[in-house]
Length: 149
Length: 150
Image 1 (cartoon, rainbow over the protein chains, first blue to last red):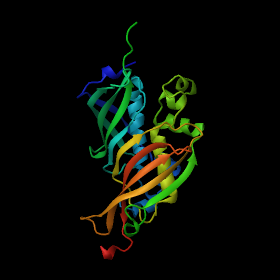
Image 2 (image 1 turned 90 degrees about the horizontal axis):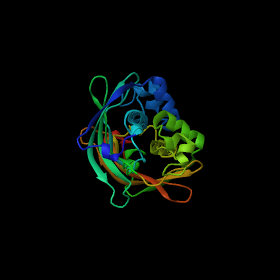
Image 3 (image 1 turned 135 degrees about the vertical axis):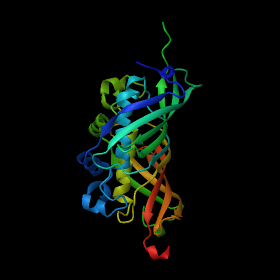
Image 4 (image 1 turned 120 degrees about the vertical axis):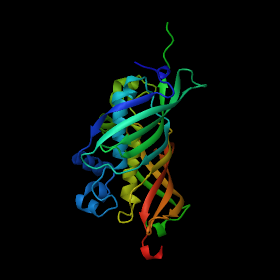
């Protein structure tokens, strides 16, 4: 298990890519974001996106899964206070392969709760042609390494 | 998000509500946020949260559904470029009923694309005890009802 102390400012993280299918896009949209351009291929063709595309919340969820599998899950995570900024820069289409890269901007030890602290990280998600599809700056809370007894 | 002309800065809409079951919380988290305090009741009990809590992304996606169901004119909506200042203020637990309040902050017509505009909304999410559990500022892009007027 890794702790807050194991993060360092400037640390860069690369994550294994993930491909998203049309079925996944439609299943997510049915449950959480049933707008025509996320659900219906024909309607989506007429939209500004030009074709069926993933709900931005689905893209964010896929990013979260990449983070939990390859970063957050290896650390003593205590959840997240929030997200400073998220931008859906370009649509994510069926068959797209998403690449994620993150950089730690700040590591802050809590003054009031000495067992924990918060990191600020910036992420960029790109597709298979190198276009940026999502950027996010967010916070994560982590436990400090317990004192050795 | 109505048509651009219909959006009134300062206008408030009350949206919802819906109840999150433990089953739905765990199902979402297994797919997108499989941290122990979202998927494992025993581990969650021993965590700082004292029990299963919903992934913050699940809370956000659930609010999106509430907004799509009651506050979006599907013909008008053109999607969203993102959001700012999202804060997960209190855990959402199984059985909690959440609702949202959507307050329009401002609206701006597009300078480059006639017939299109954007608006910013403060989205506040409350639980059944009227505690604020999540807050963010969302940006929506929408059509003008009458493109020629622009």
